[in-house]
View 1 (tube, rainbow, N blue to C red):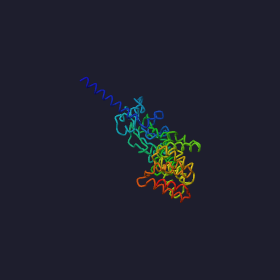
View 2 (view 1 turned 135 degrees about the vertical axis):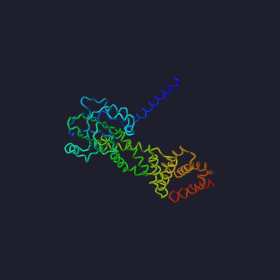
View 3 (view 1 turned 30 degrees about the vertical axis):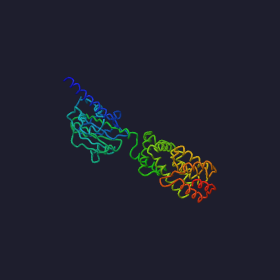
View 4 (view 1 turned 90 degrees about the horizontal axis):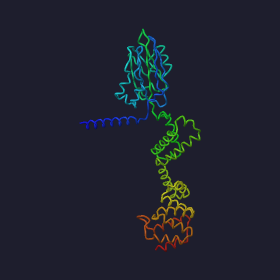
Length: 404
């Protein structure tokens, strides 16, 4: 039996530790350093307005508590100390046990009405005339204590960084002591100043860049979100705003280079270059095809097929040394690619290296270039194309005779 009790005790402790860790993994915190804690005296039957400390950037929730005290009464614990046990504002709205203790354990017999304003002029008008029509929250039933959570999603009270609480005493004989406590919840990410509108602006700029325009819509979105994340992580919004134009350009460039590969944008760009190169080659625009393939090679992302097509385009422009250079690089990557081997033989032949060309032509003469094209037939087809392109060679017939 003692063993069972120990195991049960251990299980409960473990659960509490896990529960505590889960709640500790939040995206914000109660800002006790910028909380409002004011104790004021309201004259009998009068109204008073109390400004709240300016809400920090990134405030998405507040919890406030109002307590009326009799003479010589003191609060037994502060609102800040209570919120330490509730590490997430959702714990309050869900009616957790901790939320019960948001209300003061003591309060006096006096009662008051109160209203909340997000505009100073409206608050002063309330103090003077008692006008509550434009209050963002109004408690018409007199209370001696109250506590609520307000969120930017559900209340207009937080649309500005400033708030005013107005109180009206319901004691027409004696003064009242009112304690107002307000604690803001800070969203860590939003506290860096990256509001929705600020983030939209960065995305708009990114979408206007040449690279983003080259990508399909969905991939362009992924790329720009990646760039936005890089900039947000590196700078607070006010830091980014203070950058010089050249520094902002560099921030975009650095983020873009990192996201270029992370989002596979580079692969899409390269595939687009390859497709364009094939189309240019088919139209006889060999120089433009070379222009599409060279960036892939220079960024060390070229495949065997890229070296093969690049070498072939150099052949048609009579740049035989360059054709050999890139075809030989491709051969080192995959010596079994017969299309490349054939173009390598053509390059040697057109450059005048008959011996080197002959060796390659003979080596693969009994194989197929593809499942439907033999090596010999492809040689004949290519020689015909070369002659039409103005690349005749007296050795074409010699090679064809060797392959009979």
